[in-house]
Length: 404
Image (cartoon, rainbow, N blue to C red; front, side, top):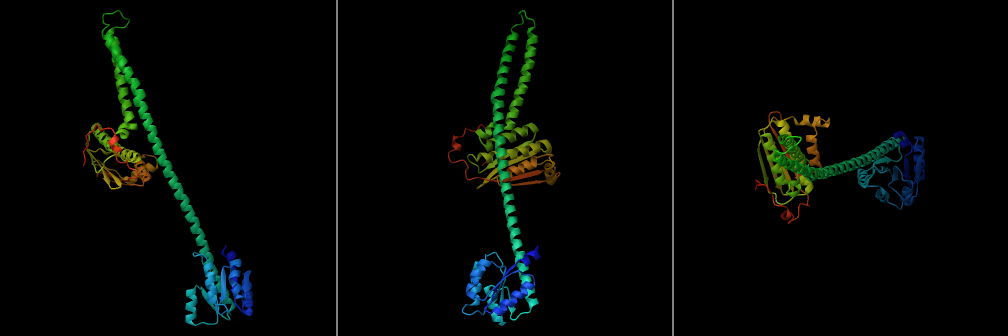
């Protein structure tokens, strides 16, 4: 590939002496270079360069009527800033100051006239190889930059899709929770009331002639009522777990306080929830993400940690929301848990990390077997926090809050 590029390299010779131009053309063509153009008219050199677009220029500095340095400067202006064009100076002046001046002007090498043919070929081959390698590197960098941009775009699209998926999940959960509470829950409550009324009537039919005795009817109705009460409790639990309506009505602080207390009572834990420097409502997506992260972490504590105590702390630091969850349980190997999640065992850790990443936040999980667990989450707060006065319109909280 490189040999083909060298063979097809374009070389421009600028020298006012026709013999020198002719000699160099012969040397280069014998070396295999087929695209060689020479001129003895320095004033036309720049136009010829523009038309020919050479890969290397052989330039005589001692030109009549035109300064060779001026020609080199004009050519340099036509070269892209990130490109390499070797300019080899043809000169009979080997004084150090002349070489230094030429190098400062952008020359790549020198050939002293008259030059040995093998030396000319060697110098030019080295310079052309450098140019083509640089061009290949540029192309590779360009391809890599394009690939990186495509990967970054795909990553951003995936993040956007994940965010929309979470939002869709929350919308669906909210809808199901309301359906469970409003439709099924209401219907079950109506059935329970009807059965209670029937039970009441049955108790007054003890003396009436019926196929089934009143006590038997009452027992059947009591059993049905018990089943309905259990079913109602399950519906309420499912509704709360899907989407606590108070998260929409009262916000993150009250919902977390209620959830921590509820889970602690259910699991027999000593729980403490604190919050600091948070007033009003936060962005709904922030509130939902923060609650889901806390919910996942607390659920893991209840199910796996064998802890006796849990602490949940929520705090605002200017434009950042901090969530800390600590327990004194048996702890776990974080990296092993993450690897198991990658293989589909448990998605708890990955789910928390993905929610945090969607909000460009940070999550740190510190745990070790026998040492308890601490989860620290930092979420940047969007500029679109609840506007002043929004929180004033929210329903009054039914919970007592601890905090400052």
